[in-house]
Length: 343
Length: 113
Image 1 (cartoon, rainbow over the protein chains, first blue to last red):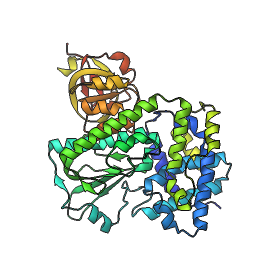
Image 2: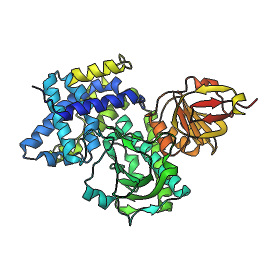
Image 3: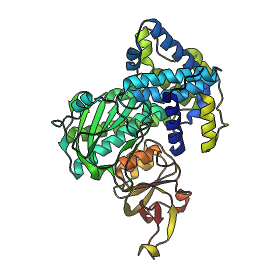
Image 4: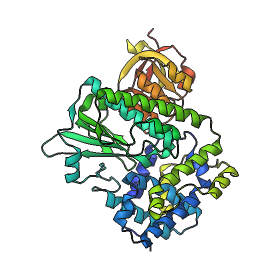
């Protein structure tokens, strides 16, 4: 029997909600049109990696930490389901694997794994009291608020340039965290991989590999969905509602001048990589997507002492492959049926 | 006053605000470098590089996509008024046209009569 726990049901409902709202992102190429060239092989290897880690005696807690952030596991699940379909695994088997991945998410997070309460609570109260440290937060004004949010925006675009649509693999937006007796909502934006030099050597020019932006807002009624899309109360905006903030990169707190400098560096590297991507053929873009998927499970392979890169046979498959062009936008009912059939 | 200005485009509100300014249609890296502060950027589709244009601009109109389109998310985050799903807007507007973007209502107005 397939696992029927709330974990899987909640995940299915949460995904459906996002899909209904999602603006289809096809830059630099529609993932659905190329994933058939590598996703089945990726899944097979991914399952083997996890089994090998279990065999090696790693606990699920040790395995989940190899993914660094819960969002990386969450973002892997639907491509993983697609790959299991290509491998012709039964629905029960697929549900079992989805359940396992969700149990890893559950271990990495303090709050609900699928954010069914509208909050993405990764940190425990003890951990969040350290991260939301009053002594580190600076009061904001118009200028600093604008600058901090420009940095947030450019970081988003930068990671999208490097990791395409799957940039959820490397960022986690979590919160809102609330403190007793306060109206403020605290949001933490973590960018955990800004220098993937194995994918893009250009990013070695950057000075920081990780960024954390902690912001305290006044009554925005923040919600965070399963894919970390943050929503705020209609007719309000982040810039006007910011009360205090800090920006920390590789453990160092940045002042306004350093934030501006970092913003410029991110923009420059983004422009260079973007130009590179724009000059790529669809096959090169597909190959880069494969590299991104293999890169996101690099820690698993490293723990096993194995090569993490895309196998040559996959590169050949992409080189000799064709674009898939038979998909269309589905309605709510079709999506529901698809999700029920999938796992 | 506004009621006399013709509505030349409609979309959905993504990030609220009302602004007036010249149109800059962005479709390439060269276009990005030409955006000036105060311009209202108009894009047909989302490309992360275009977000640099949005950061400099006063507003964003996106022809396709929705509230979760990446360029719209960035715009909202930066507090820049933005609408999405404004059908055929890149055909209705040309560079330099002065328009008013009402991103509360999701409306684009032409010059007052």
